[in-house]
Image (cartoon, rainbow, N blue to C red; front, top):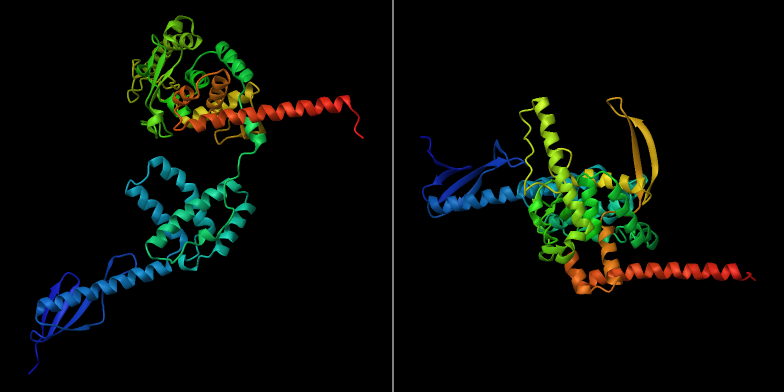
Length: 440
């Protein structure tokens, strides 16, 4: 007579009773390396227990053991490229970083995939990383670019260590992989002195106003950050009192958000209330406000002729962006940056190393400019600090105006400008002595 065995199924477990209430055999339905269930069952494991309940506990422990073994094997075989990509996409999916950060990180993730992608995590060494960085340099990736890739890889492999996949992070064995420091010559090149500032205002005063020229004027007149200027709406500017309420910044997503620090939320005074009628910045903004209204009307009239029902009509009001673009909306940070560099070069505040003509896919001739040398928008903040402190303004007041977290930041900017003047003075004296004496 054939002996009959009772079987129990629970989840992925198949439990067979070999001896009533005492001896059992457990098998588990297996998963593949991606975590998907397969049709394959594990080898049977004997489970001596006191009843079905105890046997099922032993079977569940067997299931966990098999799953952990699969995960461990997967981690052993995973490559740097796969792990980096999964890490990157997981952060984005969980909302741990902003959309902008995700886009910025994409460049480093692609470099990691290209130069280190086929190396298994467990085989990664400092020598392997050094070889990859050398190849990046050969391919023309700058020191700054290599340093950013190294920093991102270090962050990723720190997570691998925390997860127990690798015992240590090989990035810690790489020395000197840092972004290059700005030289004194480069800082001098980027500096906007008081004479440059006067010339800048003179040029802007004569040019037709638009959102970009207004942004440049405000940056030079107030020392506000680029994102803070581009995030201004008219309800944050009181032209009667001569003050600006800084409480937003505009990111590359063209979305207004709160500044990073509490000190950045502040009131910036354009001028004293008694001087509003004579202040050039107040007059400049009033003129632009009236001109902007006509720009909005012209934009709407253009849309009416195009019969473009999907495009929203521009409505001028207190919530209107002060530095609006051609579509009467928020000014794109990157577009403004390109315009600002070209404007500086056009008016001899900077220059490009290379300019070449090319024809795009539509057959239109364009000019590609690379290797910009000259001030950036942030230089206007440095000029503000230097001019105000040099004119006797209280350091704390200048700190509050610029939104610096510490007064030392404000003083360091002023001190650096003074060192530059000292170098120039020493050079002038050296030239004077050489002109009056003969070299032995």
